[in-house]
Figure 1 (cartoon, rainbow, N blue to C red):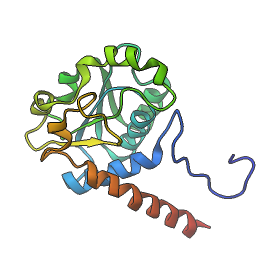
Figure 2 (figure 1 turned 90 degrees about the horizontal axis):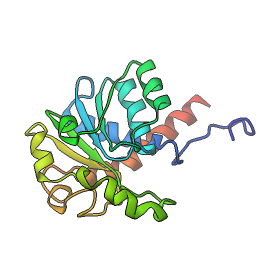
Figure 3 (figure 1 turned 30 degrees about the vertical axis):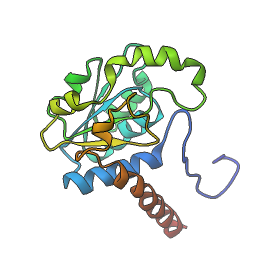
Length: 192
């Protein structure tokens, strides 16, 4: 698209990236933690488009990111390489408790994204040990927050007690999607 037009192109969501979500995530983390640089975020689940964009955002902002995924669902090597080339501290592990240890924030996404419905049974089996529940949240920093890009499946990738509990910042995160989009568009219009 960028080759065909002379106006900025904004990727709102694709199979490989979700950059506007990452902007909202960074805004939410900065608001909640007071800083980005040096904070540790544990992303628990599928190394999908959300995780990829978060990896790039983390690299550019100084966040330490640890992604815990089951075998076969990790971030692609090209994402890890690019994030590291941007200066990021990105680690890929299989143990969600290793990722969560001392984290300032836990983040997850649905186990089955749009267009993957035929894989849902296999994905539920693969991700069974990756639910963000009270026990996993307790492995993080005592003041850790919880993020999810929504919509969520309570009882699947996240326990209701976590997403609806005091650590959850998902509604602020959702509201920050609007603020992030407005800021991006304002920046693009200023440049033109």
